[in-house]
Amino acid sequence: MVTIYPPKQRTLSNDKRNPKNPRELMWLDAKTLIVIDTDEVWSINGITTRDRGFKWVTKLEEGKNYAIEKTIDQNGNFVAYYCDICSPIKLFDNDYEYYDWYLDVFKTPSSDLMILDEDEFEEAVKSKLLSVDEIVSAKKALDELKSLIKNNLLDMSNSENI
Image (tube, rainbow, N blue to C red; front, side, top):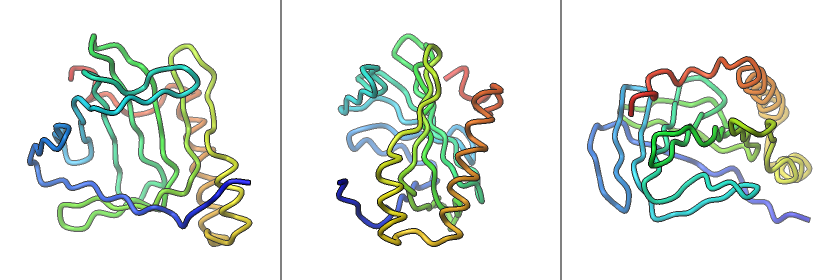
């Protein structure tokens, strides 16, 4: 059994500053956050998705039920997409805010699309941490992301020359 907690609130500030604590944040445009360098090393299924010198480009669109992250290695090569299924993204002043609804989508150039944390999602459903509407929205967002990725339609075009 998975220990499950209420959905986590995520807030990303769009105030155009580049704080270095411990990573540099830079906004490419009003919807696209670039995180440059990190001390964190992450691996998913043996694939390093975050490491020193990597860039992660996060695309946020107000009203969408997902946040898209594209990882680029230190040589400029595409590593992976990692997408959070979440509450509708809201913009308050200079901050984007959403709640993580547990499900994640992961895809590398050479792998099949993977759905991550389905056990956490199912446990959250059983524990009534998500409403019926949130469950329906999460499943719709998952289907939409799967289709976008399968058909090469994720809009990350402005991240190609970072």
